[in-house]
Image (cartoon, rainbow, N blue to C red; front, top):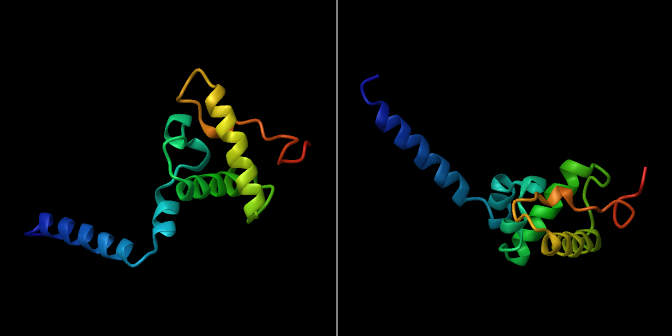
Length: 107
């Protein structure tokens, strides 16, 4: 290969163009950490991004609901927000919110 930098640049350009054709929610979904999102990041997110974060967390981590409804997502945001406000450690991941019995049935 004579021009590896050109190939890398071309690949990066194609990736940007591909992401440009996606809507904002799809892009957020790809790069969102879901349950791994620390409280410090979650509390800084706007409402739309929090919805994406919580939906991804519920779908992947809890596996209770394949596609949680809007009420479940809203209630989870409220519970996670309360948990994050009470945390002394801003690096606590949102998956540590105790949703058992509130939104997720106890086993």
